[in-house]
Structure formats: structure tokens, C-alpha cells
Image (cartoon, rainbow over all chains, first blue to last red):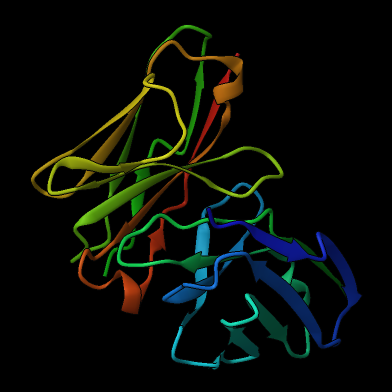
Length: 112
Length: 115
């Protein structure tokens, strides 16, 4: 059974800092991994989707890496802004339409 | 291109009542999954519908049931509501043959409060 852990649970940084969010998963037999952003009380917005054959995926100031064999993924946010404040969730995908398994996420606060 | 649409956005129900939540998938998607997210927790999988049938189910009681219509839209029904059913309910759509490549798209959720 897939289990996902995200560290840290919460993070507060001053505006402009670069930061790294960590995601670990127990079953490395995954096909992809998706990073999401969630604003308070809102739905999930997909940020990046990394295929198991890829090691990195970039979108703007965001860069996600995947080390499938060690069961780890990181989300790097460059030059953080107050608008980046949200909860970030990762979800490994096993196969086809296998349900996503989530951790509790990392709650990020970027202080102006 | 419309994303995933959920209705209503907020709902207040009394313990013991029944509730129906609705979801329209992203255009071109044919698979709908439902998740429950309690405050401070990650989303938990309830069930998934494809070709109008429940294909997979998480660890939720039979009070939770669903339906998928020919146009791929879906409903989540919860009977005999308990206080513990208060949560954000999320709908996610995907393409059966493309989830690996394109991932899942989530709606904005329905906030259910049981009093």
C-alpha cells in the first residue's frame, strides 16, 4: 500500500528565498508523480506532472525532480513570492487510473 | 476549455439527512474520481467511475454511493449523514487511456458541513 510523507509539514520564509519541499513514497513502482497546489478551502491545482522516465520537470519558477528508485521527489521554488503561499501536495501515480494517494502536504507561508 | 465543475460550492446539512454532490468532468475526460478531504489532511479516495460503473473504491462505508451518467458527469450521494462527514469533497477527472501522460484535473470542491 502506497504511503506518502511530506516534509516539512509547514514552512515560513521571507519573500525572495529559494526553497525545497520534499515528498517521499514507499512504493517505488510508480508511473508518474504529480505536484498540486491548494489554497485554503479550495480545490487542487496541478503544478507539474513528472513521468517515471523523467528526472526533472520545470514550469516557470518551479522545478520538480523525481528519484523513483529512492522513493523521493522534490519541488524547488525559486524567488518565492507571497502569492506562493498555499499548501503543496504530491501524489505518486501507480498505473493507469489507479487512485492517487496523498500525504498531508506542506503548508507554505511566504512573508512580504 | 472548461475544467472540472462541482456544485454546490457550499452545503449545510443536518445529521441523518442525505446529500447529493455533482461533478462535470473536464472536456474530453471520461473518468471521474471522488475524494474526501478533512481539515488539515490530504484527500482520501472514495471511488472512481468509468463507463457508468464504479471501477474502484476506497475504504468508505456503503452510505457513500455514486453514479456516472452517459455524458461522463457524476454524482456523489451520502446517506445518513454523520458529523464526521463534514469535509471538502473533491472531484477529479482523467482520461482512461491518458492518465499516465496527462494526470488528473481537480475541481474546486464542495464544502459540506453537517450540524
